[in-house]
Image (cartoon, rainbow, N blue to C red):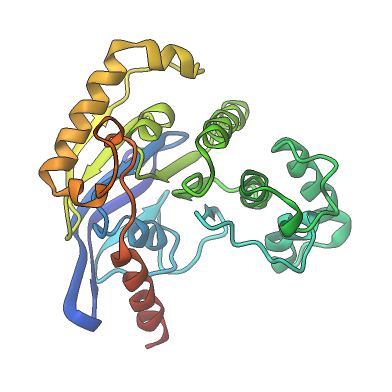
Length: 290
């Protein structure tokens, strides 16, 4: 593995024993240190399973994943993950939610408390430390999830469609804030999304996966320089060309099946997850228990 490689996925496959379903097969790619790689693909192609395997939560059927020079065999404290559905504890305050991971690592309150507060301020929620999740908007709750992950000071940040549950305006604000945070302190990041626009706005490279079983169909370099101003990216003719090209690649994999009811002009942005992801998650839990 190259000295600048942070994540190495080497010929990896995952088969769910129930139903003998192959989620992904023969996947190989690398993520360089401080690089942001975004992943798009048809629903059910194993994107979320792959992310959980990188995090050590789901065991591989074949292949090896390495973080640096260390093979992933269990959850790694160098890795943090942000989920789509917030995952906050409703009975805990914002401050307690952000400090949860630190407390689980045995960090004393005198140490985790100021860390939690500084990361709450980092994501723009200063003044909401004592609020509960039900008192926050969807975008604010997602910021709490991001602050909780960042408070762990991870070397690798995994993002599983983190902005899919918020409205379009909030989504763009969160995208910009994420890149500002990354610009101030770069981290290696793998970002799963169903939005082609989001993949291009955030990523240094876009990995396009095939339909199930997921394989790497193509890896696309994103040509836009950092720091990245979204209005300039939108105005760049290469943005539209790349968006249409990636949509064509996904359409060839049957991704249009995920767009029932979506207007034609929005197809490039509105790939929606299907029930396969929920069934796969159930199988993952059962695999882990057995």
